[in-house]
Image 1: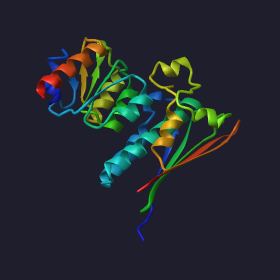
Image 2: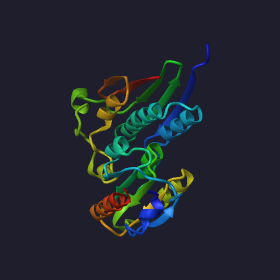
Image 3: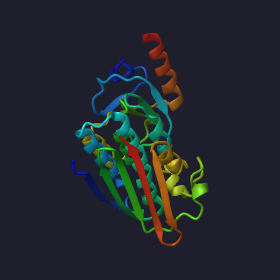
Image 4: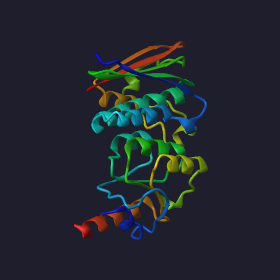
Length: 140
Length: 111
């Protein structure tokens, strides 16, 4: 049985200029491994949104990506403020990003909607005041 | 139609990257999450955002070129990242609307 490929990234929450860097690295790795471009696109979009959310709202965190024969699993964990109302956060256009963040082009309120749309599985495990772990899966 | 072929039409100069690539569609918008899910590989993406995060989205979505409208100033770290990631950046003095009109006309005439 082939080994599962694993990638780990520490997401810097203090630097917006590097936001998305982990997603770019995963994309390049999947490209090198010759995965279907549509799979790469789905993983890229979903992971980028999660990564950006961690930078905007949670002062960073960690990203772990596991690639097996059946699926690509993305696990994003942070020790941020948690999400008080996940249902609301899932709504397209809903955002709590501040104006300084919006001025950079973020805060469209499409983070969770995109994560849901481009993955086959999305789970949000969040505790207010403790943090959030997001698990996403894209089937191969 | 190549990116080079439309540069004159939209009064654009090439800031960096390969402008000999073909393009096959246009997306215009400044919100990164919207662009992330709507810019298709090979598109031209027209925007007035010019920070390094635009380059990150372009690296993930692989447009044929990003056109910076209204000659917005490109930040130094964005240029560096674009060059490192092989992103084609153009700058035009025209508005995003005018760029889109001219791109539409150019594509229509080319058909």
